[in-house]
Length: 334
Image (tube, rainbow, N blue to C red):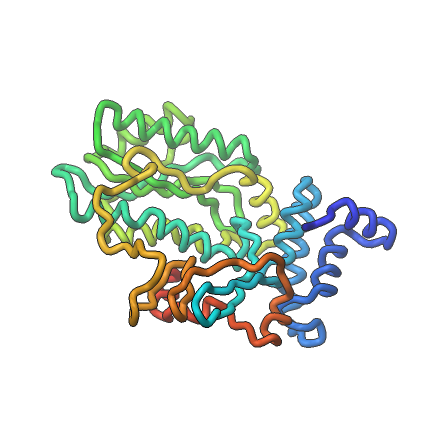
């Protein structure tokens, strides 16, 4: 557990910044590789993360800064409860929304959560209802903060509900996005429902938000691909400037980027399809859940504590992600 007061006191006593104290702790405790094996790319990444951490620290988010600095350097062990226990390690990630390491993880979780909705719509289509892609934009003021983001999402929600008042069975999922290295906040919406005239959409959006620019078009791909297209905005950071990444993280602190309404909200299909519900995999079929051993299918338990990844590798403990089929890994990332 991070002792923030101790770190702050030590940074002051040693005449270094809190960011440099976090960096030092990472090197003391270890990480992906020993310091003497750091390549130029490792040093560039550490400097990038440090500059992001400076912005977080300046805005009172010291613990998030520490998590961001230590992302993917440490791991924890998992052991299965089979007759011959198998041991693996998993990586400790910061799960900060604009972290390049964690973006694909967030994408995978979101796709797994919402793809059943699109599968359901594909087999339960409603006459006159189609998937459509909407974009709702806001005026770029050159400044972005949490209050603006929260108000923007309220306006998106109110606009869609106004358009669909008295209509049943519609739904929407949207993702907040900004322009590359700028504060142009806008929402990409995947909407399922009846036809909406673009001029009417623009009028309602302007009346509610005061903003003007909108787009709407029929989704030209199936539901799964349309969802992949929408969530691609989550899968990579929208900037290569560390100061801007830090400012975005501050602006979106305690603000969600992905939102749902109506049919897309708390979706629970009547049928379960081919989902694996057993705690133990069938013999010969080791496509297991994250709570199952990828070798034998037995239940996994987490061992308390963590250690530098380099130490775990030297102990001969293998990364559990190595056991996921390559095809399955690629399906999350493309």
